[in-house]
Structures are given as structure tokens and as C-alpha cells.
Length: 118
Length: 251
Image (cartoon, rainbow over all chains, first blue to last red):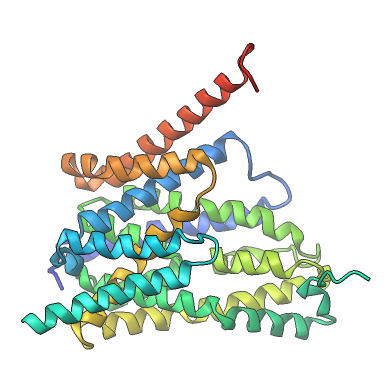
């Protein structure tokens, strides 16, 4: 576990802001249900931006990680991701759990192997 | 004679049956997948050095794994509270679309003030289960089915996060590492099933731009990646759509 440089004040402010922003989107969906359509150019753009955000986050978590994942060599992280994705691509609509299990299995094997070395 | 199966919701005749059906559907697998994800959030939060109260509070008040992980990741990268809130809002935009599509399917006597607080329990899982369960179900029972689906999923979020946090470091390191890896793997795998080309390009650009923006300034990199990558994908799609509609182009 790493030392966290984030001050408690900043962290809790961020949580409050994030919780409010998150709930605002949910509440807006409830309040405007039946009055607006969720298609249209604005939502297309927002969806694209969200996908880019999630892909960027995933890239950072796997390629530029901090904490415990940062101690795992890049080639191992790529191997874990590739193994899981390989299973997923055989049938993307139905293979999420087996793919997750594969990735977790490879991670476990690596983890125990590394523990055995130290 | 038709052998087409009746929609599962058509077997419900009263609100108690609707609620119990929702609970049964949620507890079959979705609730456990969500619980496992929250274990991962707890473990990831601990590995990044956040306190247990903070990480558990994020599950209680946000109840959205992508948003929680975006928040912790950006804080660790040095982002201020406002960019964090903006980024989490982006990840939460999908809840607006879910609410807009789901709540009109309820009976109008249930579409009152009560759906505003209930919206906090909306998630990808509960939305998908509800949309499926509502098929063939009388309108007056759907609210109770929705509650049956949502309550178990929401109830396991906080204990799952707490357990993941406190298991991390107390179990063999290999298990802690696997818990920490759970959510990044889950996010990676969701990209395998993206159908719309615009969203595929957005995801590809997001993955490519992140290392570049991160090298410039890690605190703003995630937001910049999202806005630049997503907008570029949107513009590209728009340009291709216009080309496809140009006179003289073959259909």
C-alpha cells in the first residue's frame, strides 16, 4: 500500500462534489423521464466522451498504475489483459464472467508465483 | 400451436410476487457480480492509500464503480475537487439516459416524488434487469419489481467495499492483487461489446491519448483525454455521415 499524498480536506470535497454530480444525473433522468428523449446529437457526443474517459482510465490503470498494480511488470499486466480479452472475444455477449475469471486466474497464478520467489 | 415462451413478467399477479421476482433475479448472479466489484473498489482504494471510511462512503454516496475509481484515480494524480466532480458527472451521464428510458415504463401513480430518491439505486445491472422484467408485467406491479431488483444490489455495496478494503493486506498478497485487478479488468472487457463505431473510435482514441496527456499533466489528463478523444470521434463520425449522404455517392 502506498502513502497517499491527498489531503483529507481535498478528498472529502471531491467526494461531496462527485456524489452531488452523480446524483444530479440520476435525479435528472427521473425528473425528465417521459419528457425528453435520450437520443440526439448532444447525447451522442456525451456518450463518446464517456467512452473516451473510461478507455483513458482503463489505460492508466493497466499501463500507468500506482499502488499495488504498479509493482506488477508491464508484460504481466498485458498478459492478464490479453488472456481475459481473448476469452471475451470468443462471444462478447456471453463471456464476461469466464473472461473475468480467466484474468483473475492468471493474476492469482502470477501473485502466488511472485510470493514464492520472495 | 405457438411454442414461444411468455415474458417472465407475465407470471406476476400481485406486488408481493413482483417484489420477490425482482429479489430472485437480483440475487441469482447480478448482485454477486456487483458485490465482487465493490470488493475490488475497497481493495483498490486501500492499495492507493485512501482510508476505509472514505472508500466506503464513496460506495454509499456514489454507488457507481467507474465514478468511484475515476474519483480516487484523479485525486491520486493531483486533480482538484472540481475537475473530479466533472469527470464523475461524465461517467454518470449514462444514468440520465437510463432514467429517461426506464421510469416512463412505471405506472403513473408510482411516477411521483418517490422515483427521485429511488434513482440513487439505479445502475447498469438494475436497469437491464428491470427493462427485461417489465416485459409482460402489469404496470401496477413494476415499481415493486424495480425495488426487488435494486434493494439487494444496493445493500451489498457498502459491506462489499468494507470487506474488500479490510481483506486487502490480510489475505495472501496474490488474493489482494486479484481483488485490485478486478475492476480494471472489468472495464477493459466492457469494450469488447461496444457496437457503435463512434464509441469504438472514442475508446481507441481515449486509450491512445491518455499516456500523452498524462505525461504533460496527470491532474487534468483524464478530462482532457475524454473531451479531446470523445469530440474527435464525434466529429469523425459526423464527417463520415456527411460523406455518406453526399450526392453522387453510392449508397
